[in-house]
Length: 456
Image (cartoon, rainbow, N blue to C red):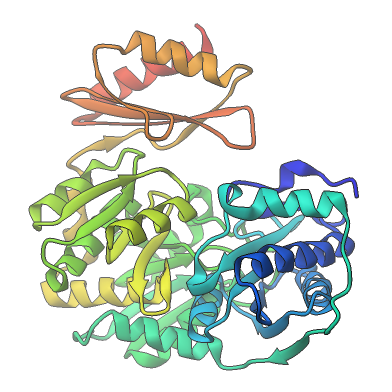
């Protein structure tokens, strides 16, 4: 079978509906996944959890995917319409051998895809199975199993997942808050509804109806333009804070009472300090992109910082390796070591932030402004380049007097500024993140590197 190899990515399978991802491909991905897991878990009928997001194409792809699994002898546990974190919970809680979530995360409506895990929601990545699945689909040598599998519908995963995440946040008081929440017509609406049932809250919901066409704005709160409506509404209503989630609900962002989005590295630092109260001296993982405030806050609270490569599967792997109870990415992914696995816990995140505001007795803006002002960040800047490796080599040579780290791309540190340049895994792009002790320094060094990348 001829397949578009580029859709088999480092962390998931993702491509354009109908042209790159088809019902036929979905079925064969199910068959290939079954072969992969049956080799890894031999001599038993494997059980696989399958869920889907709200995209129009997802139910058809889920149906074909499950048919491929069943024809391969797999017992499928169909948990239906769920967020990605609830899906991860379902894999662990149901004791399954793995799981597949039909979703394209925060991508526009024209896309769909598949996230794959092993037991306890351990990700299947490009390095640990996705490319093997691509090879199997391409070879197209599938046989129907001697014993056909079955599909069992399992309900209640959304509610139970939210309750367990809330429980993980700890038994600390939460005052009554006035909150504005924007789910971007995505899956975060499910678990936020469950959270709001468990606390005393005055909530205004924005763009709440599940709609995979994303009629109001892209379901990616990392982009500033996608939180503008939320920021305005928080100020307009005099709310205590705003909450934004992405398409499949595995990322969560906050807007303070002044209508300013809270930097994810500050949220990550706050959560690190909260977790370290219950886990003194623990190791906390965070990705290598600049966001030094996180490292500062971990060290100030007696924790051990552990820098990771960028990517949810990579940070989860490192968290398991170093037994870290918490980890966070600059992109708004926040991970916990749950009893059911290591994965994103947005309900835990929201509950712990509300608990912390209650405990400190301050507005969210008062809590984050001093932390946010400690360093000045360039934001992530993307460049189209023909020669990614050659450009990185030029930057490395130009900044050879700095402290070099090649964990993921190149990170170079000086006393008053530091930056990371890394190549996109799928596009001819370089991504620059730079941070400094003040704006003048940040802008000066940012502009110098931009000129170097552009060859000016």
